[in-house]
Length: 355
Picture 1: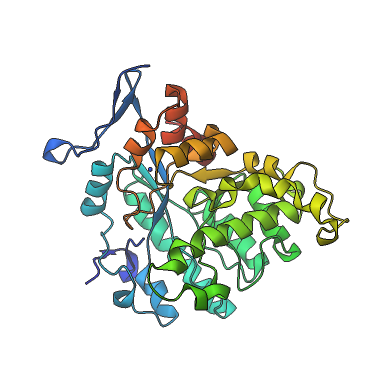
Picture 2: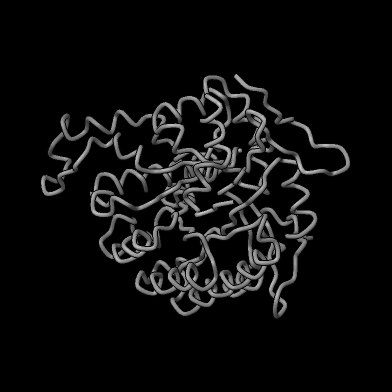
């Protein structure tokens, strides 16, 4: 049965679902104390930008039953949730709701987002030193999404929008989304991209291995980022701050291939889209979470995009990576300053956290 933390008017939140002495033990401290990370004798604040929740009241508006969710046994926001963060060594989580409303009727979707944002903002306000929020927006109506985002950032204290990797079959590189990207750029907020699988491949994903997620999610992100690059969206909005989940999907692992298609097969490229940079150079304009699974994957990701572009992502409470801090601390080849940046320094700058 799901566990919930009740907020105003009975709303609730359910979590569903990274050459000096260092101290980042892989095991929890005795007595339930918060696990701390120390580098060069200084306490490091750790910030997780990839953590999930569901607001049951909003979930129900689209006819969904929270108890039928694929991860129904969630930690409640409050002592249990904070205790889990303490064990992981995470000081701050920036919570997002995966968009399940993109195919809904506009006004219903708008109400879903309103409930999500108000409930999450209220709950985050109870624990301002531990939780922050990404806003839900009705992207099927980009102009409404602009209004929602401005309200969420300026009135509710949200840190930016959480979006999928496309919206109701439309790519984010479509011109209809330009007003939304312009508003994100104007506000200077971080856009968190979380994939929603690749439903066009559902038939092939059937069977063993949860391939809709295992393969479908990274693929969805890979397509999204590639479209933003090749369609010139990142040229039009060069100050857009994008962070994508799961280390950017597959793109950073095979990025150099992107530099060659318009040379090999120019008839497949639009001559009217004249990119200002090589496709691989755009990877260094974006940010990525550290939800990759080995030290070598983390090293490679940093080599492709820059260690200053990496931030902790846990997918908490879905247990993809239960020790994200040690993942960073134990990966060879990084300097102390690079580890400090990945653990929280870069995220703090992106999110405007000053203390």
